[in-house]
Length: 92
Image (cartoon, rainbow, N blue to C red; front, side, top):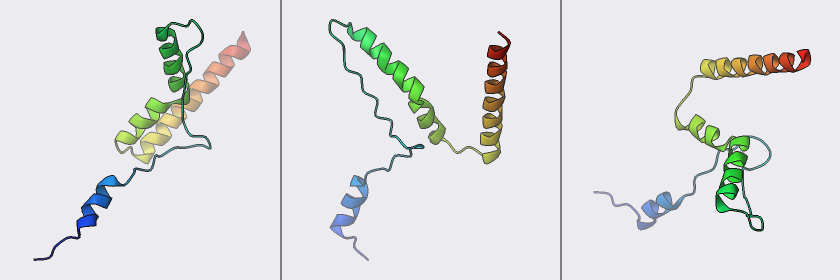
């Protein structure tokens, strides 16, 4: 019977996961409560920043495998929606 080295399991468990981030800047969102600001207001600002950065969407996107054709289809729908929105703004 072969024996494993003692450090193998220890090293494997303590390895840090590499975060998959697209873009040039990492998504470190911080919010400092302002003077006399209610904590609920600060939490609301934090959630708004997270939504703007797309942190939750990035996490959910990596949870399951997505076929490349589905990714392309979703990107196409986003492009069409952006074009429609731009056309609406130009009409007004």
